[in-house]
Length: 109
Length: 115
Image 1: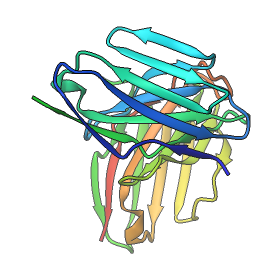
Image 2 (image 1 turned 180 degrees about the vertical axis):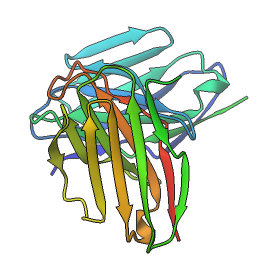
Image 3 (image 1 turned 60 degrees about the horizontal axis):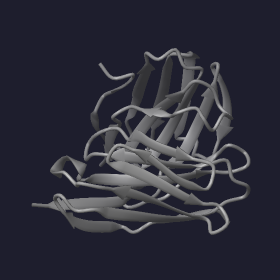
Image 4 (image 1 turned 90 degrees about the vertical axis):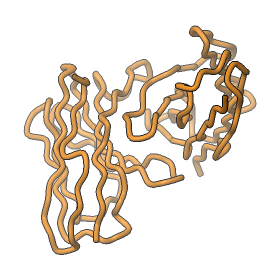
């Protein structure tokens, strides 16, 4: 079956770095997405990876290893506003998004 | 104003009621989606519309009935729901379906409580 695994919750300190991991198993693969969702708000797009490697976008970076079925989202210089849930999703060969349950990130001062 | 607007934001309904959720997108997209989000569970895709035609129905109970009168509007009609249907219902849109490079834009969701 198709599956996405990511940690349920993580805690980090303001100003630090945190890495949120995601492993996926899909029938075919058309890319890996990360979304951010603040409590009570809409999920918003963060990144899309389809080739192996690291994509950097400001304080956020996303990494993909297709051979390992693995991705991570790296958040640097953490700010209190980064407290949110981070959703990992992989697109299968039918262009369907398979979603993880999300990782709730708690930032402490 | 966000690109995808959902109303109402909160809804409490009894199991015998009939209500509807409304979604409107202002992005000129051709595809619209309904997702269900339950606590600590992955997003569940319920329905997909492309140019007002339903292209996906993921074994959703018939007590949920979608309607897409035009490419900007999407409704989810609800009747005789069960308490386990209580969740956040998210509407989303994208330029088209089947293109991984297309970003999906979500609305803020409608919180549904069935009592």
